[in-house]
Image (cartoon, rainbow, N blue to C red; front, side, top):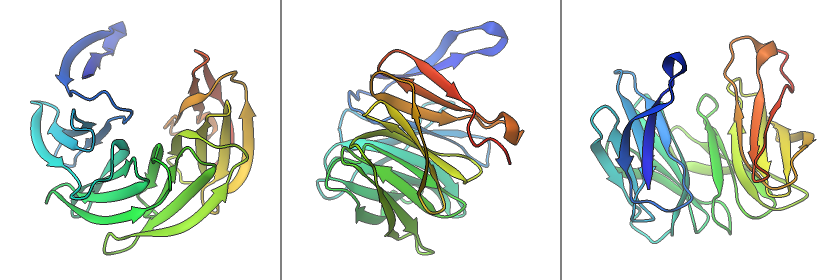
Length: 239
């Protein structure tokens, strides 16, 4: 029930600060370094449907975001900086995705995306497009129009159900999924074209992450699995 801050400089590995959240759910936090130099952290709370946004230097709460209707437990989220201020996209247990105006503490839009809980989501801010997955075998993409309204866009059916995490690479070219079937899947992000199935793990894959290396030939994909292994891949790394 805590978020910890670690000092990793000069070989250190010490916890320098922590925040008690009260949350025992599945949702991961989301971090945003704002244009003013401050860092915002969005985290789940002991109230399972609520998001709390705090300023990290003092742990001062900026706002609390809670849907008016019962959407169930908060499952996944991502926060980013828009022209109008911080925006947060959150996925809920009933399969809904809500786009939140953090500055004004109100929802821009709500869209029912899946019949099952939204296990993971990611957003391509440049293209104003997002992607979400659940315990079913469908990945669903959706768009944000100029009025910050969510609209269904495209979908792709996978061989096996269950997605733990989705990540869009920073260059907007490929998407990776962490599957309950022990596999990592790679898709072309523009048209959700299947590109590769990476088979290595012997249990469900829980997380995927891309490196943000400036050299396109050095970009890597890492995956963590319930089999207690982390795999690192060099895939589609050419510019």
